[in-house]
Amino acid sequence: MSTVEAIEEAVEQLGKHDLAAFREWFHTFEAAEWDAQIERDLSSGKLDSLADEAIAEFRSGKTRQL
Image (cartoon, rainbow, N blue to C red; front, side, top):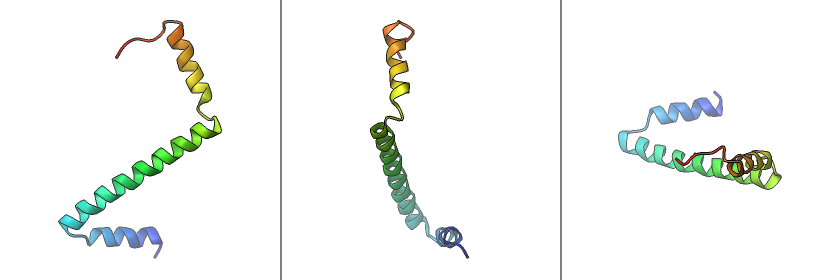
C-alpha cells in the first residue's frame, strides 16, 4: 500500500469532527504551499514578464476599473 493510499484510508475512517479539523488543516497547509511557490517564483524573476506586461497595459490605458 502506498503512502497516499494509506492516507486516503485513514481519512475515510475519520469521524465528522476530525474530518472537519483535517479539512481546515489541509486548507491552511495548501495555502501556505501556494504562498511559498509564489514567493519562489517572484524571487526567481519568473513573474517579471507578466508584471511588465500588466504595467505596460495599464500605462497605455488598456485596463479598466473593477
